[in-house]
Image (tube, rainbow, N blue to C red; front, side, top):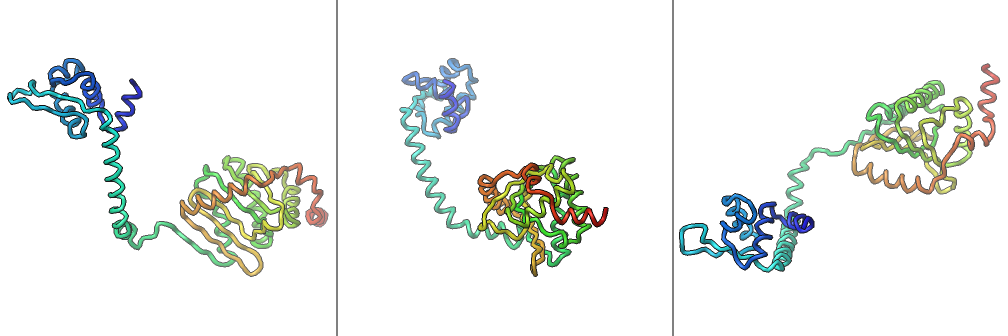
Length: 291
């Protein structure tokens, strides 16, 4: 019985209409007075339910010549009529969909007008790239970050500034609990950067989940970060230096889906793995010179 109530509710009947309809199915015909007595529904409410059921095509109302409503007789139609009603609704909805399609372009033109519903901010040069890169942790700290990371050279933004920034970001990620997933290409350059940073700070990998793809075809030259509805892209290689921030929920979802595909095939990077690559020669010389 519970399933019957649930389905009839989805069909569009109220609880009182369901009770009246189910009672009507049990009898050849009934008066509103009798239905009210059998269902314990107030008679005025029964009249409303009967009228609605009639309009929905589930019962027939046979009016008497008498002016008293008690003489009205109710007869339920064969329940099979519900399929006919649904088919008719479906036919009308398909026709309505065709009509709606004809006017959608005009309606959407009024809705969207000339207002932008996505933001694209381009920042040229070193300062632009730095602005985009350094702003990543300044909003929505509880939202996970997905990154394709090329591990840019420290000389791009200045060695001291970038080194301090990396330490700041490492501390921020550990304290805030921000979840960050990074995919890097595994090559001589990324091995150099990782052994250098891990050699400087063994906590460098904490708060980050890094995976790598080892293959010449995975050749990336920008840092592409997805955070919520924003995509931050930093390019700082050779003569191309710029930053780009795109705010677009749909584009973020699309690029995020591509990231997840890469993530599934990438290999997890561990501290033990980086340490097994040996000591970083540049860091060793740096320590010898400045210590």
